[in-house]
Length: 445
Image: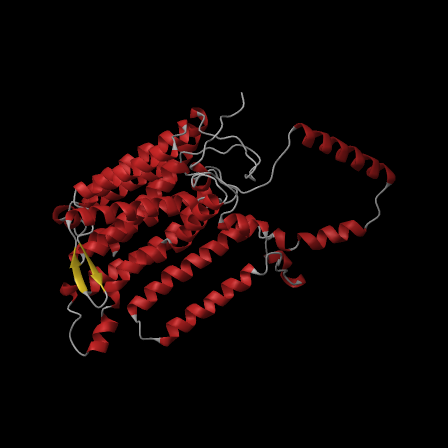
């Protein structure tokens, strides 16, 4: 565990320290889209944050290769090299798209090629544990098609959900944390070395997201762009593929005892079929709804719009930060709920806990305009946003001299004229995955 934590910290530190210089490079390179009707940021924000995340990935793999225990992952398996090869290819495609705008079909082809590169180096699904059937060995073509499909779906799901500041990196970090706990349990509790690569991938993915998140929280100073969203989507898919199709259920020796006990004990084996889906449950649902919505309207499935889940949260009255936190909450409920069920599927308390947390999530969705207010004695200990309204109300009751009213009118007129010269449109922040699959216009010259 110490070596995994060291790898995580190194990855996070490298990503965090490189994001600042990468931001300056993106500004110099002109990787800053113009503000569009669906954006809320008032000035162009640079992209290419995926550059820092990719070097964080390389640093994490390099450190792990020189550690005593994690070095065995590189000696006994070719999966880390396969991940690095696929990640480098998808990262280059993302960097080119952030700068020069690549057609959506070309990006889709690049995603399939990156998945194929990983398959050629051994990172593929070899068998599947099917309930009431047992372990089913896959042919080479079946394993390849299933692996490519899972990689493409995961990449685009993460890409689509990346529409608010800090949303994609935070959700993937939550998913990676749950997946790390699951894979580490399979590796440590059952002594299965085949789960070690997936555990390493999850630790590195957590470091990439944690290192980039401070720069990407609202108001974001830099966006990860397609170079980052597709990269973390591929790493997430690689971990799921590694633990899904590489861990043999027979090695876990779960078929002893009665049939009922065997069914309960086999839950950790079946969970790999569900864990990748629970990790990307919200992004995948957003992806499916977007495709259906755009196709129903006669539009291209890759056409950008304002119908994503995070868009709807803003439309019903949630603030930017609250919408992101609500998405975090639902991601944590689904991912850690599946993790808890895999540990003890026979416990009714786990089901009741998930139901209770889901009820809390629904209540949060129905309170978009609720703002907590601190009592008078605690106003000095809370942020100003929780006491601003009271001061504003007190200031509104005070009489305003005539000279001040005239000055205020002049300021309002000047402000209106300024707004007419530089209109600011409202919408949803983010120039990453949710808006990266459509055509982008250049900055006005």
